[in-house]
Image (tube, rainbow, N blue to C red; front, side):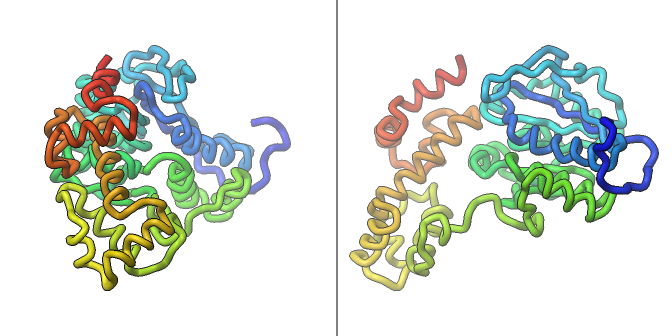
Length: 329
């Protein structure tokens, strides 16, 4: 460590704790940096090597992140020690970049006592490896629809991060910092964790139970109970092809009053907003699964492929088939 960097007196714990970050193509760099920087600052604050981290790819060759920045790894997956803690880092196009050999390696690693975790959408690889069957886990909220369609027996939480049964997962972004701060606090005490949060100018969440997304009342600038009830009902029933009457039956106001509330706070009618939610779900499923457009139409609650395709093209400027083809290519 550079001289003069240590700020806190941290008792020596012997060998440093190592973390290996398996970087899949198109991974999200924000989550990776948010996980590594607390470890770096911990070393700086203590003036000692409390943690070490290594970057890994399947074959030891460079990969490009989702922001197109290239990363040259420290080693290949085959060179990772059997006792290592391995975080799978992913992001967009996760279903296309998880190799069968990677899944096999992760499964074997877990069976032989190696520990695992994931950042953002890396949890898809853990699910394929059968690692999530007996633990609480999470992933980025945008990937929930695709994940639950592919793994209907696995239910991710909406928490920012989870640490359970030796598996650590987070929704990505700054949630990775919160997760690592809990690890650091467990390893070296609250004082160090608080110092790191301040150094990173990070407002640490009070508890891992904090949800990933902003509360609806804050997101839409209203605490009106009828509006919030309608919004929640729509979010919970994206596959049902609801009619306005179905939504009105759930709220204690007239259809005219509900229309006014939506226009005021969302700038759309209730049914326009509901259609946009379902189109967003279709978009997420196209990104995160290998489902056909027909299957995605059903999962998004549209009565026909032509209707879904029309709404999708209005929103994204391309048909679902052509959008899916660009990912495959």
